[in-house]
Length: 70
Image (cartoon, rainbow, N blue to C red; front, top):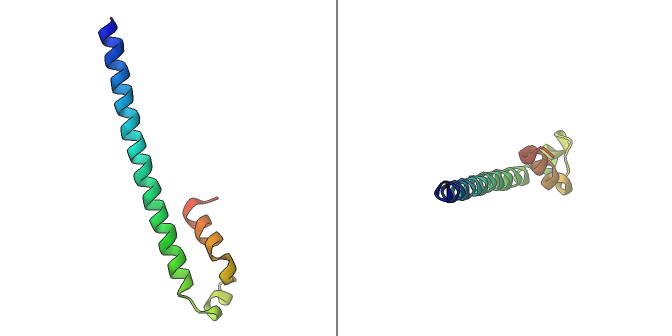
């Protein structure tokens, strides 16, 4: 029985490592999308931003909300 408990613990640890790696990959992908969104918004002219109802000061917030939805 001790073998089963030890085996279960090691599988659980392996699953947690895989999950942590997947979370890291997702966070990295989200950050890349956030940075790409900020860069694309920064390339717009002030007139184009005004047409969209945005200002330069709010670009990071708009990009954050777009990517992370918060």
